[in-house]
Image (cartoon, rainbow, N blue to C red; front, side):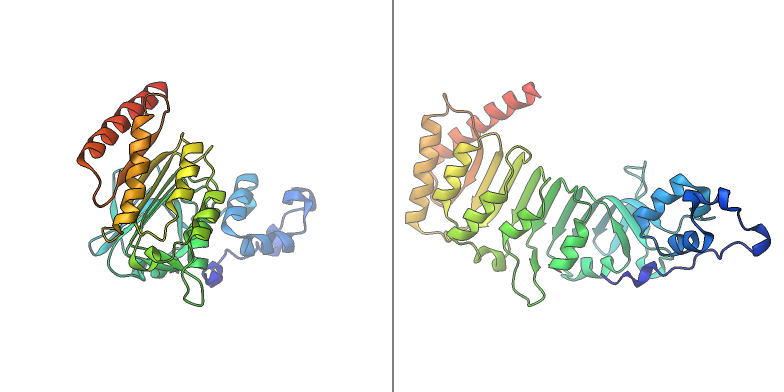
Length: 306
């Protein structure tokens, strides 16, 4: 991201006659150094400095802070901190201060580069929730979006991330960058659907932290997805709520593998706790009903325990 946006006008140092004495200087530093800090510190450091000393305060806060940012139909809307439902229109073209986003970004649009254009206006991204639909973003842009390290819910719908070369970043690399995610949901686009290999699944399960992750959902799965390998992982980590939705073009043979697994889970459901939703072509109506009822039963039990 182009950080030239940080070169905003800062208040000039006090005139000589009003300069602070050495004892009054915060941290005991010379005033030229303090002025340099005030002018060049990154936003998060500057905010901390403001909390420590009035010297670093401005007459007006230099950033436009929003809690949640959404794109709906043809416009961005936002709500301020402490106001959950009071959304207002945000005109990016007339924005006078760089954005500081504190909670979430939610984008529904067919303009695949919309989020990329938004990020040129953002100075700090502290979000906990990220949902993008029909977006293609670069790896650097994605890293900026999740730079807080605190993203809890991740949802991609027909979206993906690309390296500078244009190659698609695989799902295991995305999961690796989200160590604190509790809810992971991805409706795969055609580009992502074809990228699954046994190695991809093997790497993916290495980066899933079942002690933190609560829900995992993958949709539009093709049969290049190594289901047997992932099924072993699910059986060992049954505390996670899984939802798997497979592509309508998978083969009869692959459907049979899925059906056998579902049948086995149903047969042992009285003894082994699990939360699983599965949908695939040629799935038996009986297993659909049983799996749905089992999920409802165990989900209710889990909620009662919380």
